Image (cartoon, rainbow, N blue to C red; front, side, top):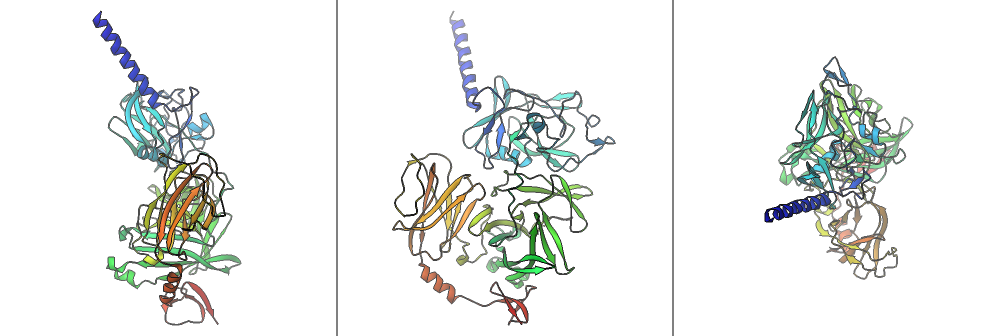
Length: 572
């Protein structure tokens, strides 16, 4: 009797442990699968709770060759739909998400689609991973920053007639193609998960969809615009970056009947940290060229050949081929959002169609240009490792920001060296409308939520990083007398930060508040010098630099157009 009782108790303990584990794994609201599970990922991507072809989270679902939408008994090069002469594969596109080749989109409809390589990488790198089981099925549990989880079965894969590694490994296709033969997938086993594994496209693998709202066609952000500034760094100069360039538009001109904007480049180099004699001789300010934009196409004027050349074409369809640089063809991927750190807008992957296969080129960001800066639109036969985009701003709004590198070249008075401060996050007990009168705001309950913001400031500029937010907020700065010195309403769906000019602020402590009806973030910073002293110092340090349109420094004004301290002066 005692033996039977022990067995019963052990069985109950095992059952209880299994049920507790299952409850911990699932984040589905009910049994009507599939659900879009919000894991709290930075990109906002939501992952399905089950595989294509499955009706429960632990179900294996279907096994598909990449780009095919039906299962089959044999997975081999001979049975693959997109193979020619038994060896050469058809190029289906850089990314097939949302296309006719996407089995998730075909079977489940919008907004479901196959995850991209970037989205798969985000899942693996951001989530906590656990090798576990659900209802007796072995697999991987991925828990996001907000505590929600999804379970993916380790369902193995098909190769030729063979069904391999069930219960040992989970391998899931992404929507991203590599070269002509391979596609990326993410995989996991007991040790750890992995990403960027290239596999032959004929293999049969599972697919776990994501829910992504495709960008609408009328949300295009203009690239050629006054007030826009690109900050570009040089990889080889270390971190902090010792060589940076600022690109910006300064003035208008008309060429061949086209209204263009003049692009300038201001360079800063920390010569104390570099022995590059060549760099020390380059002009600090130079003229880049005339740019114009129409019909979502961006052009710059080639002064040598006296013609406009195409830099970017954001109007082309998904996976369309584009001729750039007269003789090089590039494949432009579909419009997508999410998965690109420091950017919330729409971007497109670009591939150079080389003879040996597609070669990755810099991504194009709508409203920004290339991920390597506005003047480097594509790679052609080589990879330029020198430049990378550090930030892109429009007036005081930051639309792209790379937080992995610090600035060691821009002079301190130009905001390079900043002090950091953190915001306190508060969940409001009741809505509170923004105030313009400077009276004290209603306080709420301090939150233990993981969502947080931070700011950086120098004596010239305050930077507030808004990347985690995706709603409309009122940004307010008050002085020690609780007087409002800055207030602006921003939609953080489109921007990742604000750069606010504080050079004229009086000496003292200031409070920065980011709030809406649901929550608020409060931080403090201090201005050490008065605005009057700052302006006086700037006037004392003014020096005159004169350049011609070729970027060469000259001693005195010459006939024609001159660039004087960044401003254009015409001498008859």
